[in-house]
Image (cartoon, rainbow, N blue to C red; front, side, top):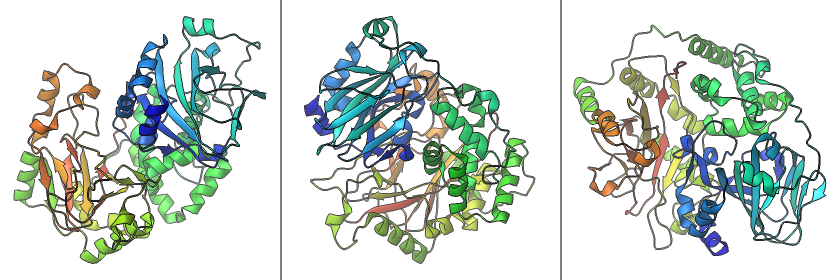
Length: 515
């Protein structure tokens, strides 16, 4: 396992989402996650707190066959599996993982793969002397904390599982059972119309749901129809899904959330506009404004037959240059020094950069023609724009290979696949060989039949040998917008040119309160 750890250490680890609960470096590599997150951001794959879901192995686990064999031999139903790395000098602050104990039918197991003599792991005030190669159960419902006072990182294999009869027999209880005292229950959820959290519609309710989920007191299935409204409030505030979830997991006091909202500097007029739009979504009201007609008949026919469009010149060359400058500055890289283009940093997830907000990027999203194009394709003006990331795909070298994502879908492959769009803007002139966006044109017309003809789980359908598919690389100029139907398999490609490909992801969606 330690030999395999050397390879896994080269994969992309993401910082632990609850950043208020630790100091120093604490990051995670997910090996097994909730099936619904199998194609999602790494940060969502790292969540161990999910209810009523299937759990699926991630590709990183295939890099560690010994670990995979060990997991297969454990006689317990396994849920989440993660590698958790605590850097020297870092501390995980005292906290509880509510309900995560055998008495509640859940268990967290720790297998140290790399530790040191100065690593101190406390549970309920008692030092737990974990050694490499030992499998420990801890009562995570009790107050616990960790301090790495050593000079090397501690890496534990952390396994969440059901506490079946076998495991309960292994665990020797050393203290009487203590009842969990929940701070609140689902019945205490605020109404979406409660504006007491930053004056924003639905935000208090969303934060409460996340806190209850952390405490394992929320039936997520009961609130599945609110997911698009959850996403909408974060996008309309200009925060974005991933940064918003990070913040709402991080803050445990309403005062912290209010300060965070104030730091975004929304005006009263902006908050009023956000609340009006969210209220319409919650009431399932649809806009009656006329739909723009900016695409011509030839473009519409191409869209219907091929499932994608390239619309030239949505941004000017100067706007693209300013956007690229923002990316270079964020990476602290020099366009004249190719050696600076290749970095192993938390700022990147494969070729995705964790850069969501910047005045230049925000201005790009506000181009009126972008909204009008999406509105015509959706045949609705009742749309919300995402606050998404940018991408930096440098040329391959002997030392750096394209890490993906390869072709994939960002939806669950269950027929019928609903209408939806995705999009990006090239910020650099991009040839077919320059890490271009790729898709399978026209597949949206046959995807439902294809799914029905394959008697496979949706996650298994994602695993395709793409060499036999009619994949097309889309070359375009800086400032060109590419929109595609979400039913098309798509992805970036290997950059065999001399210059990085940079893009900004832009999309719009309609809130469906019945989903």
